[in-house]
Length: 472
Image (cartoon, rainbow, N blue to C red):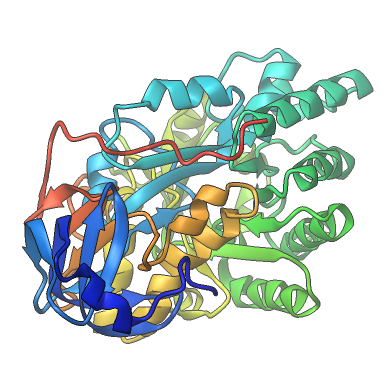
């Protein structure tokens, strides 16, 4: 990957007399784009990295990062919780840009307007096939369509498909950074409908972030055909395909699915996938995921389901009760051995799928750094930084050039930077108490402004900016 600016350390004498807004001194600077891993001093002015020096720099303020890792802030491709209650947890977990790309929105302009000037970290959104389909089908707005809704269970007429395509294209013209799909939630959205939307995405170099259509291996339409579908949609349309939480949908056969993605990449196809480091997922119990046959498809039963509101494990009776009521349910479906394998894979990115009620909303990235890098030694720290920062930024930069300045520690990059203690960083959130800050992230800087300082979240600081695609 090319650096943002041609730069040599020999030129650093030019900075000897310059005073930067902020200097990060004496830290172990790690840039996943170039492989730099050395003690350096970073000069920041106007929200941008202006210097990376072997020698000391002068700043109006100085952060002494001796003994700490200095890295690019994490780019979370899959963050559903996008409210003021969520952002502090993301900042304390090292996330500087949080993106709602799986479900997305039907109104890109309104989504960005509601958050402008009000967020501590950067924010971005896809134009979502789910909410667009809901609006075209005439359902009431909802985060996910109920199983018996028209958005889930009605085939689109030619006129409705035309309307969906028009809304998707309008969203991309208004700066959506991707197109989101939840095909398991909209089972009557045909493969042809998906292809037509992928073709719109291709016109704007927008990646398509897909919750796959099927689970299980026992029927003709299964988890393998679901992966085939995403790869084929990308190959035919030319739009980049990205499979969200591949381990959550794939369960025990996930390593096989990642091999399929890797093989497609080797053939030159622009496809990718993400995972999160937990043995359980979470979704709405009223969704089509729990249509009859869900136990066979997922290889689980009622006791694998945990009701978020009470923490209870479900029975047939309580499942039926809550299915009528609706609400969030945690789905315990994967062994820890699988999680370790997919987190360490060189073919996966990390994304949280964050939402209040699940520990991944608060602890995803610190869990990677603490449990899987330091404790288990499942992957080296530099690879973890690629998975959490660089690769997610690269996934989006063709559609949204602003991401060329994220996920890297280089001169000219945005000063979205985290400083953490590699010997102490760890997640604290649990399935019983999901709303707990992670530990060990000492500083989170967004455009050079500390929103976490000395391990404490800074209230009433809102340097976050819209991470948006080109507006046409």
